[in-house]
Length: 356
Image 1: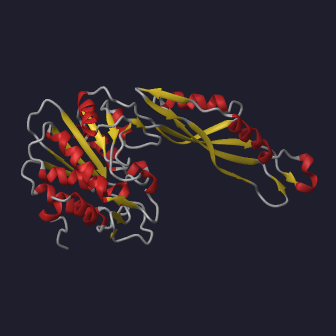
Image 2: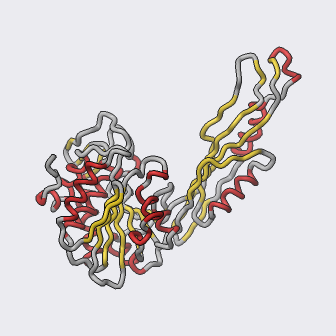
Image 3: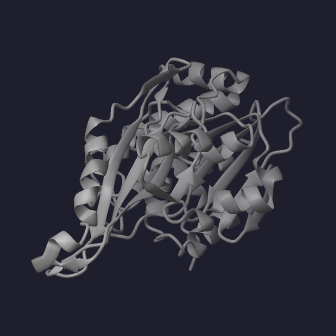
């Protein structure tokens, strides 16, 4: 197929958003869109381009004092009768419009049209953000090509509706197990009901008071919730096992180890099994490039209430922020859309910042 990302499309981030949305790229099926992006970047003379899997990296080599990263994922969640794109008034509808092909379009537009930025820039267009971490393109790059990520500052073009969201929360998911002893329900006194024992787990959750933590002026609200409960054998058996799955969203002043220690304290006396964990990221607002970015955007940063790939940069000591035109409340929704004005404003802001 001919590459739809033509020179006429690349100069307009709105048309580029539509073109990217119209290339289907559900997670693990990003080859076509990665091929198109790579082709564009390899024809851009001021960039050096490399690729691993379906993750494409392009970078300038201008000898600037600072290097910044613009990063965005190419994949989407599964299509839900919302593809290809459509336009209604000032809105572009379609799978990935908000999360996050409008952000990717801005980065690709700048990569193709800004040959002489004030910083050296690394552009990362990566695969498989919407699924398990083992497939995530940034995760694979950090393990196999960490030099691609080296920079003084990074912007992840996740949907923030034009706001600046600093850092991110950490997340820890664990299963709290209760044990009992099986018996026939007609002789229930001979057993111990593990589901009844889970009542104490739920009471502790109901009584839990989460922290609110302010870091660099950004307020992070923690949360601990039961998200799934399983147990039971049959309609006439007292169950001997029950499992309550809980999720802790923790402020980035806690490490994963500290978050786990806190969870053990909350559920003292119960067996705890960790099934997933990822660190948070501190705001990183003191980096010179970050301060200049905030001046260009002209809004006060807020805390990112959720986990994003900024944490991967933070783990490497690189301060990172979230900034993108999409509305995060519309991500993954069947009526997902993005405002055309937000795309143009975001592109103008990032151009102003990168051009110095």
